[in-house]
Image (cartoon, rainbow, N blue to C red; front, side, top):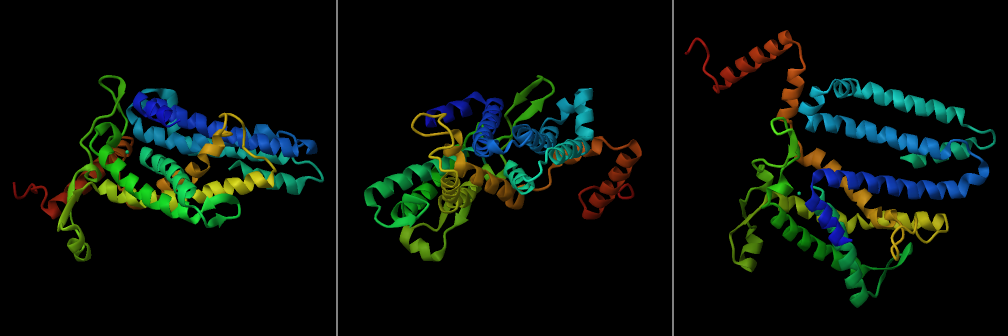
Length: 345
C-alpha cells in the first residue's frame, strides 16, 4: 500500500486528485451501505439517492471555486466553464435547495425523527500529513508490541500508552526528515498551473520562503547540549512539527471514533475491499481528521493574499473600475516612495 501511494505521487497531480476523489467516494459508499443495511427495514424512500446527491453538491461547491482559482486561464477560454464559474454559488445553492425539497418530500409518517437523524450522517501539505499518520500507525504498533503494558482506551483494547508515546516521538522525527527531503524538490513544493502557451499543466516555480533554507538561533538552554549556536533548516520543517504532533496526539482519535462507530453497528470492518484490512474507510479513518486540520492550519497560518487571484478578479472588472483601481494603487505607491510622481519626474 505504501508503494502504491508513492507510485500515485510519481504519476502526477491529476492522477493524485483522481485517486483522492475515488477514495472519498468509496469511503462514503461504505458508510452509506452500513446505514442502508441497518435502516432498510423502515422503507425510507430515496435514502441512498439523497445521500449521493448531497455528496455531489458538497464536492461541486468546494471544488468549483478552487478549480477557477488555479485554472483561471482555461476556465475563461471556455464559455460554459465561464458561466459555471460566474454563477457558482447560486448554482450550488440551487442544488442544495433541490436536495432540501427532495428530503422534505421523502419524509415518512412515524419515522420523522429517524429521517432527521439520518440526514446529518451525510456530511509538499498532502504527502507529509498522510505519511505522518501512516508512520504513527506503524510506530505506535511497534512500540506497543515490544513495550506495551498500560491500556490506553477501552474502545481499542490493544492500544497502549507506551505505543502512543513512542509513536509520537518517532512521528515527529520522521516528519522533520521527510519535510527536509521534500523541500529540495520543486515537484513537491510548486503548485500545479495551467500553461496557456503549451496548453498543458506544469509544475515549475521559484520556491516560496517556506521551502528555502533559513538560519535559526538555537535557544541558550540547548546550545550547551548540542554544541551549536545556529541551525539551518527549512521553515516547512517547523510546520511539519505541528503536523506530526497533531497526527500523533489527535489523529488517533479518528480511529477511536471509527471503532466506536463500528461497535454501535455491531460490525468488525466498514467493508472487505482490502483483504486483511477491511474497507477503505478502515484505512482512512484518521486521515479525514488530519485533512481537516491541514486545511484549517493552512488557512490560519500559511495562506495570505493571493496576487494571481487578485489579478484574475481585476481582469473581470469593467474598464472604468480597472482604471480607478490603477489610479488608487499608483497614488498609494507614490506616497510610499516606490514610484516617482509625475511632478517629480
